[in-house]
Amino acid sequence: MASRRQSSLLNGQLSKGASLAIIVALALSGCAAQKKELTTGSIPTTNFSKPVQSMNATELSAAAESIGKAYERNPKDRTAGLNYANMLRMTGRNDQALAVMQQVAINFPNDREVLAAYGKSQAAAGQLEQALNTISRAQTPDRPDWKLKSAEGAILDQLGRASEARLRYREALDIQPNEPTVLSNLGMSYLLNKDLKTAETYLTSAVKQPGADSSVRQNLALAVGLQGRFAEAEQIARQELSQDQAEANVKYLRSIMSQQNAWQKLSKEDKGTN
Image (cartoon, rainbow, N blue to C red):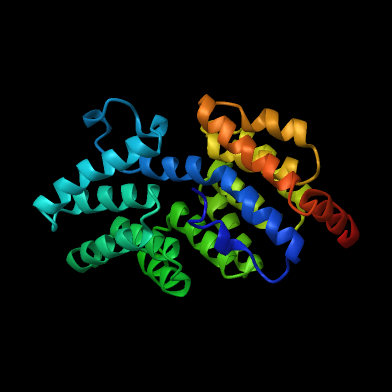
């Protein structure tokens, strides 16, 4: 559920124990974050019995199959390709999503939205340097796009280039002040370097912004939980989610508690580095 960008965000600055905690805990935001990505596109949600945000894994798989048939009928259809790649990423089929976006990018080599989606697919498939190059190609200096700035920051974080990543996030915020998704990404950048207090500050700010969604709240739950405030983290994790989603997130939180005392270890290391 959560290995798309999360597992590759780890870098050498994290200890083995802390890495274990974050690998497991970052599963909290995976499903919600990917559903958000889908709804910002042009998925024909009216064709389904419920919004994609509310679909479980089985329903998402069926939806992907439905959209895939539209793509098969016309592989050169830009919208069908973008929709299908988004759905494939949602269901964890990252290599297939990349293959779809490669074909779309061949047909629309100068389309910013296509290049951005292509870069996301490359990053999801672990091709980080290629993704960074693709996202950079999609950006134009005279009309900078804050979403591309934020996407570039996320890739730089995955490459362990935190200072560059944060610069991109702040550039995105200059264009789109107080954007919750960018504030969330900025908070997660600090979390991955074990600066949990700063991470919580940015994530708390993100949650307070209009338009903040469940993925932002799950990231805040993660930052709070990694500081040992599990009851508070569980309360945050249960907000605005279905019962099944909430229970899955809480299960991941609880799993951290049973693995080599990773929560306590990370908390002690964080205090020792401040």
